[in-house]
Image 1 (tube, rainbow, N blue to C red):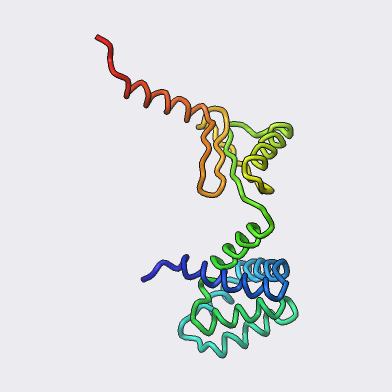
Image 2 (cartoon, helix red, strand yellow):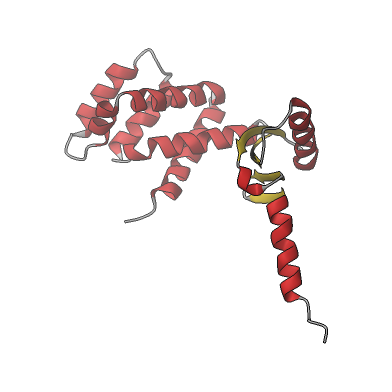
Length: 184
């Protein structure tokens, strides 16, 4: 079986381009978020829409009945496409990738900061400012507390990891000491 994520990314990119042409990037993003939330709240509906034994025409009719008046035509067309291609199971991954593309278009980047203790408002503002200067983008930062890092901060921006933790510094010191030649 093929990895569904690259396929979902292709569908998301096609949707993004269509929404860009029609100048409805934000409404489509909001519609996708709404559909995902609704399906999480109605797992039985999601199961029926993803079921391989239910004909696509019935699924489209069901989806149209549920989504009519709640989402715009571009999002509804996207749902129909996924149903026709038997790819409805990709909706959530495609919606997440669409959100990433929208954020990139808006000059935004997501970051995750892990600290040993919660950040103060001043520390948070300073870290955000530094990240925004380094990336040149608006940073959307989430925070996690993990006492195991001992102190400092580990920041993940995209695929880049900036380890400024005490645990990371100790690990680096250990590696240097182990690699150093022993004096006799």
